[in-house]
Length: 143
Image 1: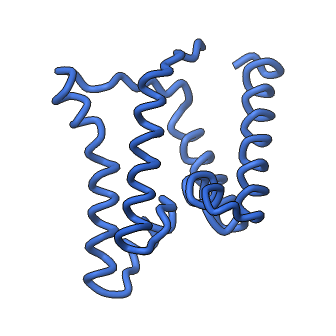
Image 2: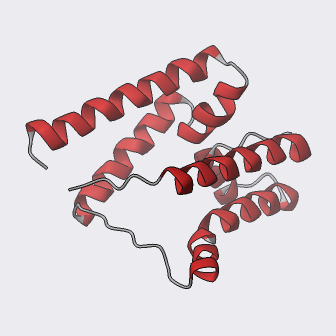
């Protein structure tokens, strides 16, 4: 499996995520952690709480449609694992989010920007775990 190097698309995506995080914090006083936004959407504190969360999730889901409007085609996504592996990975991420008190977007984007020691440690842990996982899957297991 070859990983495509897309520096301009990655830079644009990162800038949009950063802008969204800053706007959400500046306008609503909320942190844009994806799992926290989704959890609050499923169990909101009221309509006002639900509505901003629904808007954030709608923005996340609409990304491929915006790409299609701009380029004329949907982005190609290849998932080189089985559905069972996706489910297992999702469960592992869910456990990690629970024990880590947040996800990569909450800690890595918002927490790091606030220089939160807990978020810096969490982000370092995410990155180290990712590096080890990729090494094991690609070089040890031959995936």
